[in-house]
Amino acid sequence: MRAFNKVFVISLPRCATVSMCDGLGRLGVRLAHLGKIYGEETPPHNDPQRLAEMHAQISEGNFDLDILKLCDGLIDYPACIPTVFEALDRQFPGSLFINVRRDHNVDAWLRSVERQFVGLQLIKMGAESTETDREFMQVMRSFRAGTFGQAEFDADVYRQAYQRHQQLIATYFAGREADLLDFEDISVLEMHGYEMLGRFLECDTPAALFPRVNDHSDAPRLAFLKAVREGRIQSQTGIKVEL
Image (cartoon, rainbow, N blue to C red; front, side, top):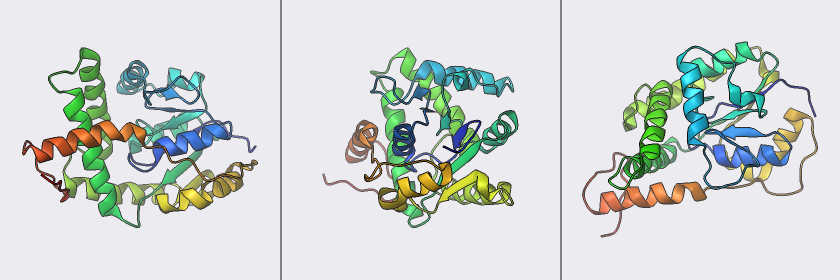
């Protein structure tokens, strides 16, 4: 395998981050997704305590993150936050970066984000939530604000943030194309994900379709749809449910 310091997947949320974590893990690259390191007992797909620890260190301007002593890199928050991945690039020279876009259908990405973000908040901040749930959500909201400019979902704001994120990555890695693997759309992953990762990492890959992991989205999606059906919220992206 190609030599590297760390691997940071800087895709925005809802861009196959859990699937990419699984795919890289099967190649021997163990990343932390929201604090949960590949190979640790699952579910869930996150570790609230480690996520909070990362948040505390970053808030202090310390990017020598403790979790990176235990794994090969990060995926999703906080790696997708522009100021964070730039700081991690300086802190860990010789690292590699991966970005998965959803350029073929940004509207579908927005609907996915709305279901997940709003639904998760309904669960984690609801009447049956625990103190751990609420603390986890506060960290997630802080990371969302750093990524999108605000924590609350707004379709127009988040669409602009998506375009800004992709342009920033293109500009930041201009002249450093060997350090970045950029998938133009999640649709490329199933048939060509391992092939492209193999070339980028210079490693052997399994003769199999790329993983597609989405079970973690079921509960937020159902919570969101229930709230829409009951009239407690209204979708900004046109998501409708049968009454």
